[in-house]
Amino acid sequence: MDLPIMPPVEPMLAKAVDDIPAGMQYEAKWDGFRSIVFRDADEVELTSRTGKSLTRYFPELVEALRAELPERCVLDGEIVVAHDGRLHFEELQERIHPAASRVRTLAERTPASFIAFDLLALGDVLLAEQPLSARREALVSALAAARPPVHTAPATADRELARSWFTRFEGAGLDGIVAKPLDQPYRPGVRSMFKIKHSRTADCVLAGYRDHKDGGGVGSLLLGLHDAAGVLQHVGVCASFTAARRRELAEELAPLRMADPSEHPWAAWSNDAAHESARLPGAPSRWSGGKDAAWVPLRPERVCEVGYDHMEGTRFRHTTRFKRWRPDRAPESCDYHQLEEPVGYDLADLLAPGPQA
Image (tube, rainbow, N blue to C red; front, side, top):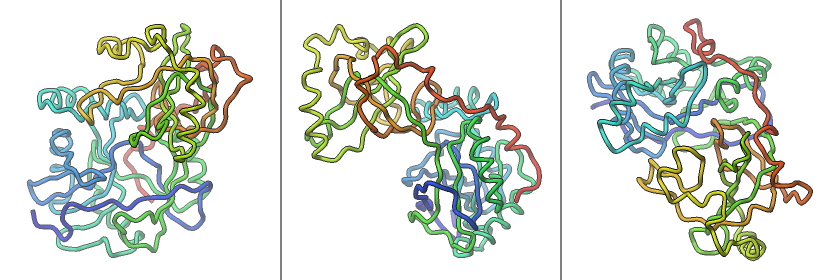
């Protein structure tokens, strides 16, 4: 492989802001695996945000990229799994599997797509040093004839249209808007873009915690919500406490530690088969190859309010943010009904072929 820019390349990053800034290019914030794609004739390499190779996990995408991309190019984009009108991040995670046979099966069952949103090199020309406005024009031209599952990310310079996208696209599983300065070159590893994400709150049952990796108190709180049958389902974690707060939490929660964990709603977490019918902490991790770290069961008697951006199926997509304790709420009242459901939006409408801004 011999391209104007060679792997590994750190992708340009975004910092969170509260509102959509003016005077920029706006795109949807895709919920997938960020990937830099390198193609040199028959050679195709997909690298992750951290520079690791993703190529072996997406054989069907390698074939499609070889067929649909210019013969020599470097693209920044997102690998997603999309069907039934929306993105499915959990199914995308399943693709990171050590067994080649399993990867091939999933490639047929849940094929991936690539959403391109930047062009870093084309032929012998290094575009990364050019402003985004020029790179965008080159990207749209280079992928004008590309067919699914390769797509060019829709973009606009209309701030009001971006505001409407922020609301509408959530129903298809996207989690916000990215704003990019039009006059800026590509800056690997630098947070020079802006991301605007949805922000909501929910009251959850505190049902356990994990110790911090340095042993200095509570690392993360384990959260639960009751489903329609009244079963407490594990929906995510709350973390990012200061060192002092981690120690305070360990003392504060000590009276809730269970002498007999067999009475805990998630007592079956160590049984692999139990994870097939319920959402429990400690599920096998496809990234680490085993179960998540052990956790400390607590009597599910305390409720906390957390901030979150959006849901992936029946769980919080990202780590939540602790807001406050809710002594006025009964744990039994914390269920899925309180969660706001975004208005449905068919992802096919967003990815439909047509002129791009």
